[in-house]
Length: 75
Image 1 (tube, rainbow, N blue to C red):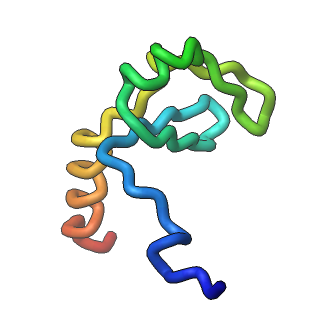
Image 2 (cartoon, rainbow, N blue to C red):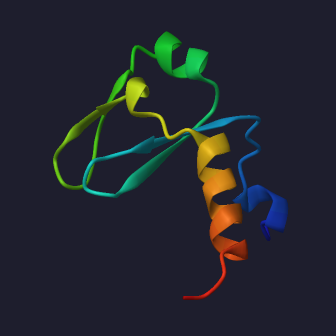
């Protein structure tokens, strides 16, 4: 049986991006309530640092800062 391209993807309605002090980011798929209901509220960065949902990246500010960088004039 040949798998279709749609079998390779997971539909996700929400995501959370955690940011570590080392600069790495961890993307959690699903709603915050899903992670709480699973009893999973701490996550480990590749550097070994423990991250929580409080380490969430402010995506709106991140997107805005990226937009500003694109329009910044060269020095």
